[in-house]
Length: 208
Image 1 (cartoon, rainbow, N blue to C red):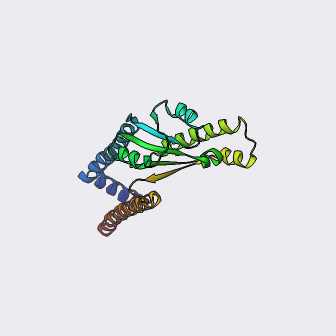
Image 2: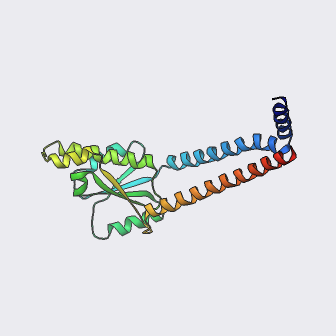
Image 3: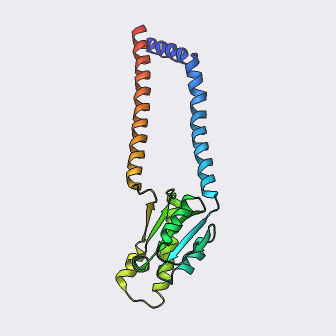
């Protein structure tokens, strides 16, 4: 037992006194904190940008409810649907004049499905917020005189906000590629960490 404790003591002192141990102990956590801090700062800055969102309501009854709910932190603008209006709005999005366009039609009124078009995919929090505003407004209109139980059930299930990128790329494919890159990078870092640690353990065993 004394031999084992002597070996443990020797290995502990050898690792603690090394410059790499001190550097890794101090710099490692600071590096991780810096990464999280930068991500949070950029995320808050993006969420805090005050830009307008355009609502195109083809139902004629949903705009007021949706606008009142989204207008708490966004500048809402109403544009009537007409031939060629979508191209004009897409140009305004690309010029950074507006954040995006929310399209409301009969499927929004019946099942809570809406389409959001923009250059940048909105955050998960913003998608949930828009979906809630759309569903609550549709329910409000439906409960005023409609009696379709199936449609009301679809609204109560949560509805859906479909994101459409102006460049035509599949957002789910982009998410899959991002997840693949993050997974590969994490696996590579884990592999390097285990390799370096394994080499150190092997050297220590050979020295003992």
